[in-house]
Image (cartoon, rainbow, N blue to C red; front, side, top):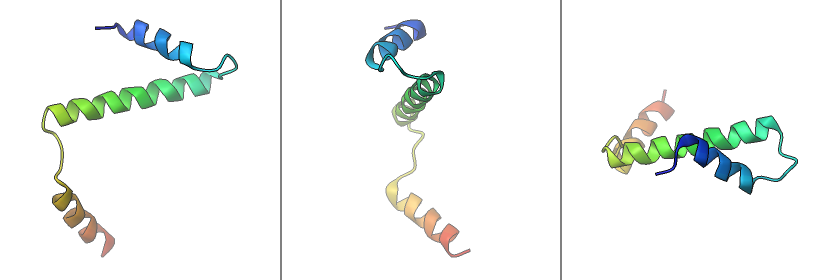
Length: 62
């Protein structure tokens, strides 16, 4: 498994040379959030679609 540093180095290789620090931070942030989401799925920390729709319906009517 790659270290965090290895992952960032690989990410930097894929970005254009003129990427700003803000661009780099954004890509690191998005990657981190995707990994967190996948870990949540693996751990069963998800909400079924029907439950989500029920919750949204309650929220929309307020």
